[in-house]
Amino acid sequence: MKFKLLLTSTAVTAAMFVSAANAGELTIMSWGGAYTVSQTEAYYKPWQAATGHKINSVDSDNPAAPIKAQVEAGNVSIDIADVEYSDAIRYCDEGLLEEIDASTLPAAPDGTPAVDDFIEGALTDCAVANIVWSTIFAYDSSKIEGEKPSSLADFFDTTKFPGKRGMRKSAKANMEMALIADGVAPADVYSTLETDEGVAQALAKMATIKDDIIWWEAGAQPPQLLADGEVLMTTAYNGRIFGAAVGEGKPFEIVWDGQILDFDLYVIPKGAPNKELAMEFIKFATGTEPLAAQASWISYGPARASSAALVGKYKDGKTDMAPHMPTAPENMTTALVNNFEFWADRNDELSEQFNAWLLAN
Image 1 (tube, rainbow, N blue to C red):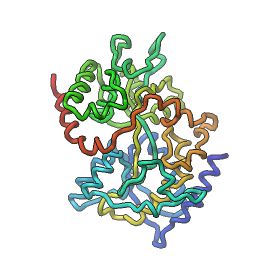
Image 2: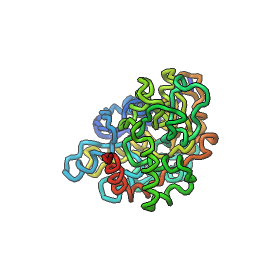
Image 3: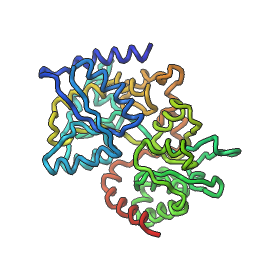
């Protein structure tokens, strides 16, 4: 009943953002799978019902990837993309995104301005965050007898826990996790990665399990790799594992040690065909109630403080969502917040080194 009331309330809120123009269409690119389902239920459907506008939802392994080429070619087909923080910063600096005036975003229900209600760091010149998520690792508990993995060191220990490992085919998050597994304190990870020796240390740690790694690129792949028995453990986005474990009853367990916290944010590519309508949607979707409603579908934390009190149970009506959020106090003990500026500055360089390492024998 609470979720139905939320949807009703968000539909009323959406009516505030109806354009005077005739019904239009938006193309929104996101990550697919359970994540896009959560956005569809919490944002797309209520907004479409209230405004008469249409949303074309497009999935991508990385929604930031097409933006640069489209903008530089002057042929932009995406109105809104859901991107990672470092991509939002880099593309904004490169002039590839429209600026967003945070003062135009809706206030919290108690009147708190949006700029004071969003979590610190959730608003940038060109982006508005909707979720806090994390990269974690998970395992299939039905495949491990006795002692269970409890640390990143266990993920990299194929002697103690023999079996394949799934990892995202990317330098980001892998390098941080490798250093933590190798004994580097979370607080020292980025100062270590700033050095050539630190990069070498991270790659050397990954090399210890290189022959046992199955690489994934799309967020839907890690739970499928576990379900198919292709890997014993895998890094993953926490919400994807939650969806498989709680939503589908899979025997998957998340290990929060060394989780890498991150934001996902909405951006509007420069030259988007429906810029004004895109902004109206972002105003609605990142309001207090829609952000809380999304948390009923997937275990990603809302980016506004005022949304937290509205986060209740999962869509099954019985699972409390708060303990499954990456920001739950008990899950934050060894968490590392992604250094967005570090990756905005170093992504190309470290990706090149990572790819060279992949190709090396």
